[in-house]
Length: 424
Image 1 (tube, rainbow, N blue to C red):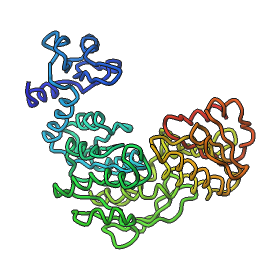
Image 2 (cartoon, rainbow, N blue to C red; image 1 turned 90 degrees about the vertical axis):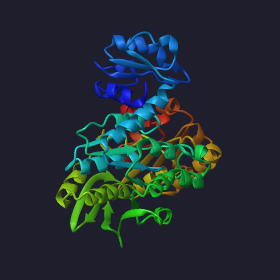
Image 3 (cartoon, rainbow, N blue to C red; image 1 turned 120 degrees about the vertical axis):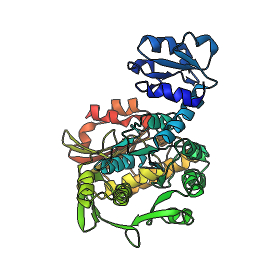
Image 4 (tube, rainbow, N blue to C red; image 1 turned 180 degrees about the horizontal axis):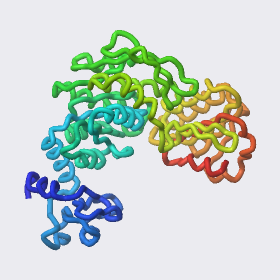
């Protein structure tokens, strides 16, 4: 069966599913494989659960007219997504970056949905499976698609761009994330800039933060739409972050519910894109001011006499440094609970030591380090306390010592530091 015939079946299906536990009636099930699972084995179960079709790539599971045998299920999913994207001819905005991708995507969606019917990446489904699923979730009603792209090695963004074929794109920032896979900071810049390479080669539009010299340098040959504090297509000025970011756009003061000056760039991107697509400034202001962070990303929570900055969805040296510097700007008693940062490769020991040195040098009352990597760091001041594991921290730490404080909780996803909330 060729891809156009498969697409016709897809259009007559409910939606795409890759998980038999979440099958809805008349879904098209794709039997993906992984290191520890084989979706082909669940094709029959998917059909029994209500799926209309099951796409398989092993002949023994091609059991009836509802199963469709292909050479490779994953590649077929990706090819179908690209075909569907071109079938709809929906303008696509793609974004990547080291930090702030999901928050920025949500902000862009909040702004654009004031005027357009948008379809955006759900959560952070931003990889070689998530991007196709996002494209296939778009319908004839979709007016603009917003596709988040993540990567931890070279050529990944290029691959995702070839699937999504974006008309517009942006990079939030370049930072110390996934150093192990990218091979250092220069590798991060090269890998993320594959977004620019695609857009430039296809004569598409790049949204550029003029306050970021790397972005400016990398997009000299691009068709650009710029934003920043000076000499840009749209002027957006940072006012303060105490603790929430306030900024100025077209003489409107926008008071956000996002903490930390490191979020200013994410907010500015959404405003600039709204401006580009001719959304009126009052609607942009309302969209930005109404947006509330969630999913452990820069959330402000008050619990048991503690103001908590919960930023435990993920962490790398760049975002960790920004969060610590933001905490120092807060008034009163300040405490940080920091969890290990992952995927740093050979730089892991050095990066954890540098964050340790920074944390204990700042004006904090206490810093708690949790995880094997931070446990190896040398402490130069007594305000720091180290625990090798979360269980050690849980059983030993005196939580009464952080009462009436502003508490930062930050670590990589694998540390699951949001568990601290249950301990307060």
